[in-house]
Image (cartoon, rainbow, N blue to C red; front, top):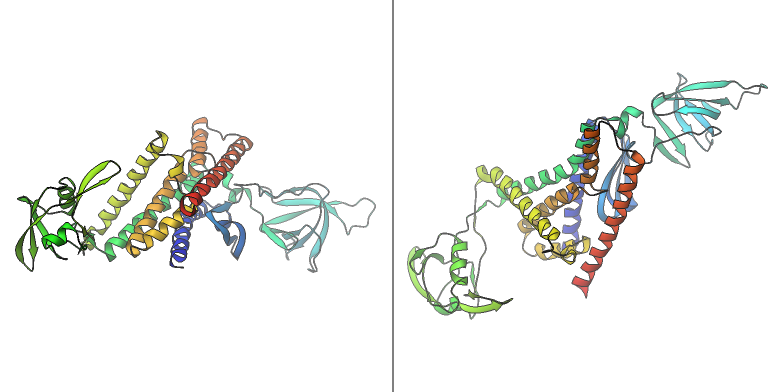
Amino acid sequence: MQTVIAFIIIFGALVFFHELGHFIFAKRAGIMVREFAIGMGPKIFGMTKGETLYTIRLLPIGGYVRMAGDDLDSIELQPGYRVALVTNEDNVVQKIILNQKNNHPNVVFLEVERADLNKGLWIEGYDEDDDSEYPRIVRYKVARNAVIAENGNETMIAPYDRQFNSKTVGQRAMAIFAGPLFNFILAFFIFLAIGLLQGKPTYEPVITEVTDNGPAMEAGMQDGDLVTAINGVQITQWQELSAAIQENPGKPLAFVVERAGAPVHLTVTPDAVTEQGQTFGRIGVLYQTPFESAPLEAIPNAAVNTYDFTVQIFKMLGMLVTGQFSIDDLSGPVGIYKYTESVAEHGVYQLMRWAAMLSINLGIMNLLPLPALDGGRLLFFAFEAVRGKPINREKEGLVHFVGIVLLMVLMVVVTWNDIQKFFF
């Protein structure tokens, strides 16, 4: 249950902040956001506030912000449609009912002849209550916040200036780029919180625990010993201590440790351990990094950690491209869940670091110039900026559709690999 809760919180936070970036910059550009969704697939919770439907969906494989004009949600009333119009006191249409079932006192029944719900915001048609031999065509102004009602569902119209494609290339690009950007911002603030709460790692060579029947215990080493020198060489960092031990399997080492404020001399001979064809030394101690409070260093350290993890992930991508890293090494939701289970055993701070790394990873993956990803859309915006005109929407939509199909196939393959790796 602990792992389930941790996974839900981490997944929810990563997706929420990613979509929040899209949402905020879409709203700043004046784009109508129809839905803010966490998860994919069937809806398990929904709440409408203002013009946006906020939903939580069943499948934990992402989320989305559905912007007006950025999908196939354009509303067109074809000639011959029979609709009911609900008007206000100024005879402006507030609601267009497609099934014509409504008891509102201001309903007008109309057979549509022409309509413009994007720029002109009007509707023309024949008044069905006109019993004359030649019914006249009447025109009604449509309110900017009018809704289309059908079978109990209502959809607000989106005037052209509220649609995604009406905005400048820069505004559209920022609305898309903001999603990955917010993942990097989230990672930074997670590292900042760790720095403020846990402090700064000192990497002092303090022995956290001496394991039973190991060379360290046989030599008389104790929990809490601070190693100050090995073979006459001063030791100030754990990495120096670890390197000295690993590089000298089977060789006696002269340790000087500080215990209760006094130096103690010990001779420890590391065991020779061979793993994956390599032999190294091991003395049988455990280490847990000491931390000290350093609030003034929390901000720069958070920036450095965010940068370091970003570089590390790019290096892994390079290994994937060059074949040093195979598709079998990739992980999907199942793999992330299992790794979350492992990390959770090491405490909340390790879990927070894991969440920060996943957030950076999500940001980078979405910036890859591949169809259906944010990076792929940004690539199309770059082409548009260079050409001075947008690429054909149908062709772009086809490319993104193919990309979505390929991504879903990749997700199935990765998930199957995860299932085989962890359960068989």
